[in-house]
Length: 405
Image (cartoon, rainbow, N blue to C red):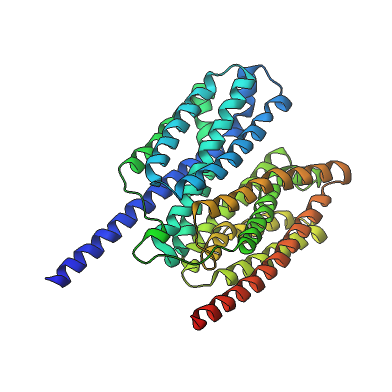
């Protein structure tokens, strides 16, 4: 009888975990869809508000600041209250904000809406990354890669959705109303799914102390990796044009190749994450990134090299973000505030590094951004080495304390 009850309980537990992880996967598809929709709709938004493209670019900044603030506040909330009701509310409000975007004819009002969209988006991001670790603990590896694959999938198909809607309706309104409707789907799922229990409050609590040094080092790695990823993805189009290896059409394909291979790489990384240690995967990623950057640095004018480098760089960068999250879980307890620190680092990197590349591009030419990519990647490699040394020392100290106790 007890064996039957135990089996039933285990089956129910696994079923709940699947429901919870499916909610995170679904919300990350929507997150990818909405994150990638701004770029293709910029001309339409400019027309709606009577703004120039230069003026409408303020939307990127306000969205980024909203994301930054939301990252700081949502992590604090998740550590104190059940997460799913908050996420259901955040997605519902986000859907309302998205639905209002095409109705705004004032740039200031539109900037405010994008600030709110960034704020609510960060809650989904912090929540998915944190809660998936709470659900699966040390078995989170493949699921974390799957989570970020679904984000990449949403970002990859978003421009296609935008193009189809504009082609059929002649305006961007339908795009945002469709995105608003899709955003309500995971909101309903969250409202119907119980929240996971924080590791510290579970039957097998995670009582490891949090290390400010280790959290800071991982946040710095997020800064460098996310900054260089978005810098590469944002500037490869113009780089291909300026280097004379692509025209206006093929440069677009070059950008799609990078993002497409990055998404494919996340799919391929799901089984790898179950077999390889995160430090091994990140080392392999760093080797690949340096190799393909050096290809660009030395042989960019050779036919086909830029295409090979874009594909290889996308594959090498594919699993970096989820691997950093998995690696963090092995050395510190993942709380909402810890994940917030990581995403603040990534947000600051996304605002800073691509901007620096643009300044260098303007003053010193296209190859200067490749030099910055190499410098950022080598700095990340050095910081990764420091992290490994600090993590090893901390584990030795904890072992000494436990043996003494």
